[in-house]
Image 1 (cartoon, rainbow, N blue to C red):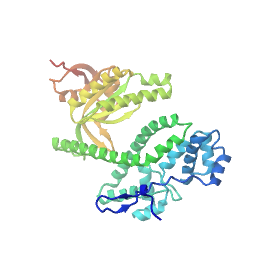
Image 2 (cartoon, one colour):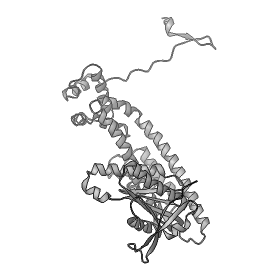
Image 3 (cartoon, helix red, strand yellow):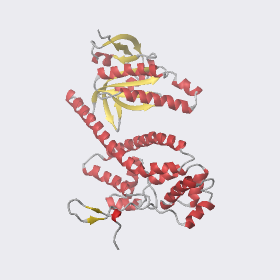
Image 4 (cartoon, rainbow, N blue to C red):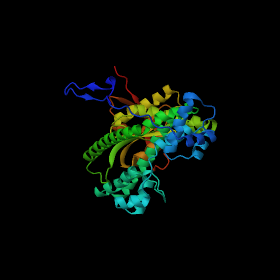
Length: 400
């Protein structure tokens, strides 16, 4: 039997007749018995035509991913079908138990559990909860050990990474929740997101790896400068740095009057403003509710950012901001900083007037007098500091 002419073509180089590429088949729908179950469960009530077909596609996808009819019924009652769909899209099927993970990697079960807890993964006591990605996570512990790194430092770094990854996930979730709320009545729209979600997650993992490598490179350069600048520093990683705390004046009183959601928005705006302003050699270490902490080995750069932050908070309509800065030897550890200038800056900010930047004498001595002016802000007894401290208010000199 001859193939119809319109379904064949001649290749230019060989002159042979070949058939066109086959078109992909449509994904088969659910069998009639399953369709009847959807109907009996009330999952298709009020739907017809394209809307009904789209909903059937969503339900069938969830069933194929392991959801039960009861799961679907409960999710539909709570308008959570879209959430359930995305949850399944982001949940690879588990293949390994914690014992399997430990055996394959060559670590003890206790070490595997401790590592997963530190990094924020969670340690399941039983069942095949883990997948190949978890296997790679566990191998990371052995790779760190093979490098000869200190055991306590490995787990300390893992805890910091775990805490911050949850923060990143929370920020991404807030964006996704906004879209899910908009499609609450139409979970089939979420099917398009689910199809691409794993690819997006993999892509963001590549971005995260690049950003971590870049930040680590900057940190290593900063460490090298600190070591070269003071050969007398005996503590590993110790550096001469400026430490700045900036906080919102009256935030505690605001907390007694405003709703928690409003407080969260104020804190988020402060975090956004600080993040927008900070760039190397200044580093934003952390935000703590109504305050931010920054460090830098460059006193002039840190002073500029502190003054910019005070001005930006006012322009943003935030409660009035104040900043305190100290200078001295500090030690980085697990993403945070410790040492006398950290404690000192935390005390200085408590006596700084609103919308001003107040610094210690040591920090003032480090500033370029051509760029900044300073005026005495009095001698203060600061909590936890033995001797009275002479402080200075600073500002930028006008440029002609």
